[in-house]
Image (tube, rainbow, N blue to C red; front, side, top):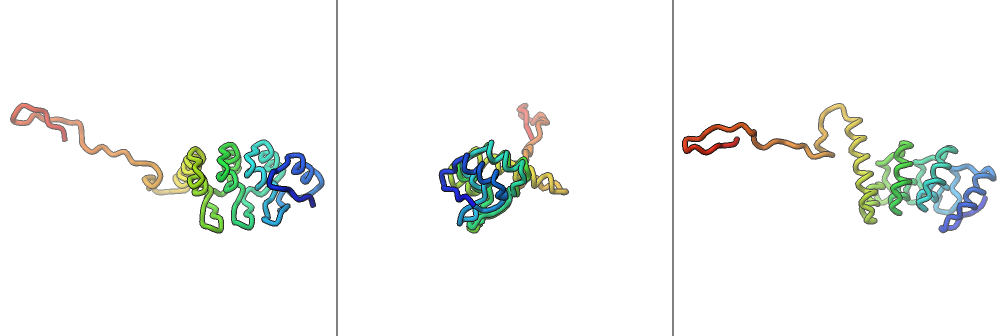
Length: 159
């Protein structure tokens, strides 16, 4: 089996898959599959190709990280979008107990973190039968009514 280095050569990865190696086979000692490497390299086209060939988008490496974690750590919104669209589990935790959302916040990729937060909230709302949406989105409440009455001194009073 062809071993890949951290620089992720597209030709090497393509050769690896064309020679019959499973798209889910970990090619390195850290058990990072080709889909991990594509997501961690921010290579959305290659990631899409791998997902179309049956790559396991929730496979975890020795650090407990799935491709979603890798994409979040490098700030690849495009890769995150592909993985989420393919129903990647956004609540998977790595061995440090961090989700991809946590890693995006910690790495300073605010757009990616906000995207994952929004997806998490939409999934929670979708799966929730009750109306406890206040966990994700602020509930807008009117503190006072806009009806008015005349007070005895002629000024309008709002309540």
